[in-house]
Image 1 (tube, rainbow, N blue to C red):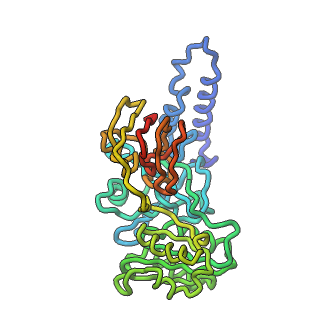
Image 2: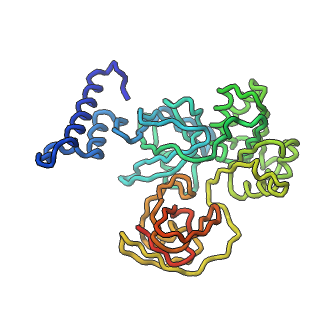
Image 3: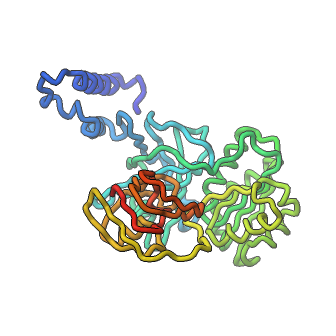
Length: 377
């Protein structure tokens, strides 16, 4: 948003806002058709964007301020959001909306920046084989482009106050929320003791590798271990225990591929220490549950009925049937796919909870049908 030195642009926005307020305060006896788009928030946002690309009444828009090459297949996009950005907590994620060939696409990414730097935030994106959005961002998103952001979300955040002894463990792109935590702890002069263990295929693939090494060299509270699987094999619970002998006495923040996290978390569970582990899921964890039976899903708004095999998330089942429900992260974080279930029984694939409550809101991406279901979809 331009500062007060740009008086004419600030005045323009003020005038348009006053038009919108006036239009919405008119009585029904007055024909306000001529005031459109001033009485339509979406249309007014479009009009504001013509004056300045990041202007909006309530939507969060952000200009790309820098693109940083972290590894051959990873980029950090530094974003400058407008004044609608509410701020975030280290470890949270944000939904990013981009337009590709005229179609809006949403994906959810962890914020990798120190949350105190709210005027400059960052998401770090790894190129995914066949990834529609990640590949487009790598190939086309440039400084000066504008994207739309959702509100920060997620509960993968450090306890408050932070424990005296921390263990941050990541693999691959799972490092992104932990990097935000580490930057936050360093800025706040964290007085405890933190061990950071990051696993990557090679040392050249270690995201933020140089920054981590420099930070460990000047910050006595930090002990860093970068584990290269090409040199030392996969990082498992045994290897982690060897790197961090007091690992069971630390509060652990864990993020990475599901199989990697399951193996390490099982080590804590076997010792009754699962309460010391916080996990961020970038995919739906595998659950040892019996497969469901074929069911019928009735969609009221679209007036469609389809059969589901009862094994996969309802989002995937609906897409197979030709429907296009709104969605973002696909792993239960962003709530974009939330939908009213009017009747039927569903299982939450993250928690295992089975519910038959009528008229409850469910997330399609993490819910599978356990009976015939009626959705307001």
